[in-house]
Structures are given as structure tokens and as C-alpha cells.
Image (cartoon, rainbow, N blue to C red):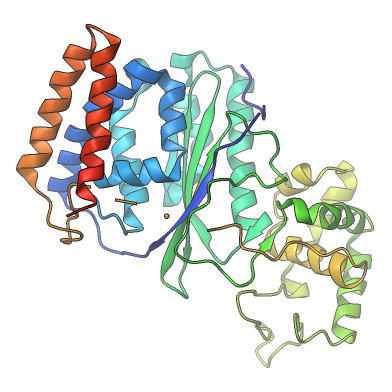
Length: 384
């Protein structure tokens, strides 16, 4: 099986207002009822890889959440729809496995793959490769891209040959959540602008983006710097302090020694909180590739920032500070936005879709008509 990068990636980002309440049981039940026929149509039309491709599209994912009755503008649509999909999708019926989830489940990708991997004939090596990919993608959106959103949801959807990842982070300061989409199909690089089709209602003034093509030289310099060892890096950080670069970074400690002065959008690393043993690990392993650098456990956002700053202010190789982000609606939402959920309509839609599926088994034309009715239904909701 080949789960690696191969030709045009389709991944994206969406930013949503933070809602802390839980979805009611009656809504979850009906989301499953309506979601099942939609997934059946997709499987009949496009197979397991088609489902991954759809869910890896920010707009389609948002539209599906809306069709199923969840708030179009809520951060909860990501986690709730993810939970609904885990109830609907299974390897026997869809040729897919969904691993991970919200909170603690986000770290259980390997465990979930091991539990269901036999159905898709995953080998031990396949599971290990997918698990490493899961961890790398999470590391990229949490450390290589530092936009202020800390990940708390990570969902991986895999078929025999492809994978998609949907993860979400929280920025408590602005009460927003941002969703990140990844797709293995067509992905050529994890490091040069892997995020395409990006949508967001919030764009940060400054966001460290080490996976931008503009950061290539900075990545190269960062690798060279970290190979010099922890003692040399500490001296570089000391030089930054001596240069009094307070317009961008200030390592001066406050009285409680646990805080530093901050600049808008960026919290700079404090030297004594960085895990220097991870730097020594890089030297022992002889890492000379930035992707491999990101895989090192314990080498987190703080060290990535420190290396980027050293590269910029001492060696003149600046990273990209541009936020990689640039937005979706359908049967109503449980809080009445854009209008109250119509339970009768939801059940009726499920029944119509079930009938369409039965007819679609006769010929491809009916299958296409069924999918068109879904899209037409979604479009009609926008005018209410």
C-alpha cells in the first residue's frame, strides 16, 4: 500500500466561532439518520476514496454539517460531525476506517487503526506509516504553523490507499476555532505550501509559517543551527537578547520567572522552558531533513520559533510570517441560526434519499440525479 505524497493536494482551513455547549441527543440521532443515505450515495458513486476526497474539502464538509442540521457557524460542527461519521462509516460497508477524535481520542489513531485495520488488510508497517503520518500532520499544524490555534481534535479517515485528516484548534483569546483539512491524494510535499483552498473569517496579522515556500531558506538554516547543539543555540538566544530586539522578541523574565513580555499574535519561547534534550536527540540521529526534524518528540513550537528567530536575526534567513488562511451553509441549526431545525424535513430528506439510492442502483443517471438533489437542497437553504 502507498500512503505517501504523490500529485495536487486539496487541503484547507476554516475558522469558526467557539461554541461550548453540547449537541442535543435528538439532533445527533437525526444527523445519523440523514447522514447514512448520503454516505451510501457517495460510496456507490465515488467509492471510499471519493468519500475521503469530499470530507477533505472544507466547503463540502461544512455543507454536510449544515445539511445534517448543525449550526453553519459553530466550532462544534467539526467535532459533532466527526462523531456522527464515526457512527455511520465502517470498513465493511464503506471500505474506510475513522481513527482519532476529540480530546484524548485525538491521540488514539494507532490504537483505532489496529482495532479495525484487519478488515482492510493493513499490515503492521501500514499502521505504523499511517500513525507516523497522523503525528506529522498534527505537528505541522500545531508547531510548524503557529497561528495561535492549539489542536484539540484530530480525525483520520483512511482507505486501502489514501488518507484524509480533519483537525481543529482553539484560540481562547479570540474565542475562535480553526479547522485544518488534509488529503494524501495529490500531496507532493508536507513543507511547501501544503494548505490549498484555505478559508477563514479571521486572518492573523502575524503567524509563523514554516511550511511556506517562502520559508525554505529559513528551514535549511534552522537545520544547520540545531546541528550545532544546545549550547550554541543558547548562546545565539543570548545574542538576540543582547541585541535588544524588543520590537519583535524580548526574553526578559518577569518577577515570577515564568512569563516574558509578549508582542501581538506571537508568544516567544523562554530559554529555560525549552526541551534541550530534544536538540541533543537531533544531533544523535543526524537529522538533515526538516520533515524528520518535526517528527522528533519533545521538539515543540517553542524550539521551532527559537530556530526561526535565530535564522532570521543572526543569519538573515527570515521565515514566512503570513497567516496561510483566506469560507458555508442548510436545514437550519439547533440554536435557530439561520432558522430552527425542521425535524419533519430532516426525516423526509432521509426517506427521499433512501428512495433515490434504491433507484440509483438501476442506472448511473439516477445516481447522478440523487447527488444533484443533495446539492440543490443545500443551495436552496442559502436563500432563507
